[in-house]
Length: 201
Image (cartoon, rainbow, N blue to C red):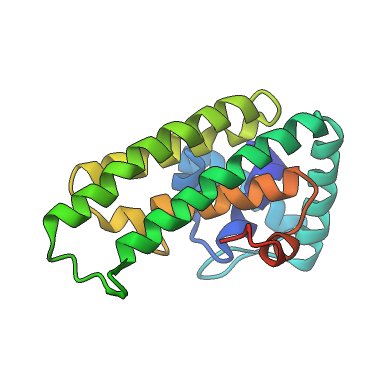
């Protein structure tokens, strides 16, 4: 497990337990603990009830992300991110329709309406999976996002719809938000600039 992968995971989560960190990375707890201990000793992570990235860790992560960007085809990543923007707009609309029905909070008492919204998720998932298939040769560490999105989708399809938008777990929305952040950074952009342009969630 790379220093970059772990630091980025902690940064994206904000604060995270070591067990949850291992789960989101898809790594064995022992291997995660070994890397965490190394980064804590280096002053890049701060430990306590949860882990968080230190100021030095943010600086180090910025360096690692810059090095990573230097090794990729920026034109290809820009094209991939442009494609993601359209799928992101689709997903934002899906989530809005899940949360709001006819201008009112969705009470989820209309099974037909909810089923129609969830049916759209399969199409969105197919589109984002194809995008990830294109980006992984450039950024292999993003392969885990395909797995996490598929895991969340499976839980939704099994009937646990909290895995669509619930915060604080690797729900579909949580993983999507983190993937969006990864692609913004890979394209050399910022979320602030994307928000002003209307592309950020």
